[in-house]
Image (tube, rainbow, N blue to C red; front, side, top):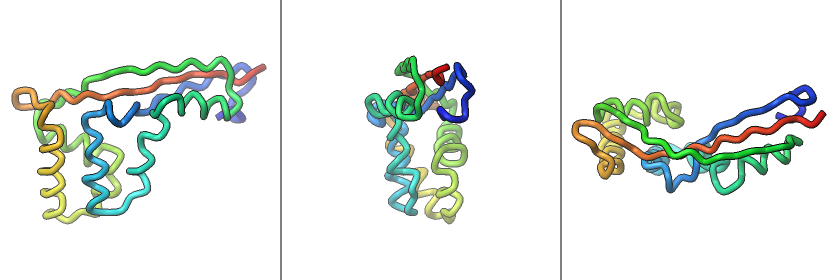
Amino acid sequence: MGTALRPDGRCVAAVWGDRRHCGWAEIFPIVDARVQSDVCPMFFQLGTGDALALTMSQAGLAGIEAQRISVRLRYATADDALGAAFAGGPVALAYARFDEETRLAAHEEYLASIAPFRSGDGYDIPGEFVGASGKRPA
């Protein structure tokens, strides 16, 4: 990142925060139990502690500012929550390898994992982002 910027150029990045603050995080062990993925173990790595800011510093950026942002992910239906987690989320490539029986079992297990966040017919799932910015010194 640091070498791609011109002097005084600014870099901004956002990653998912700490896994324990993301109610949907059980998607990873659910998928990993069905197909081995390199994504699952690493997904929250930059959101842990000061990892994103440290990475930006190691890339040569200065004046780094980082912030944790708590969010609520609202899904009107179970199908919306499943689509966001499996088809449009970070496990989409692994999920594409599932046969129908495996998909149904994974759906059932995931919906059970987010059941505490059920709100009416939908879900209100907590999440966290870490945003950081820094610039390349002049």
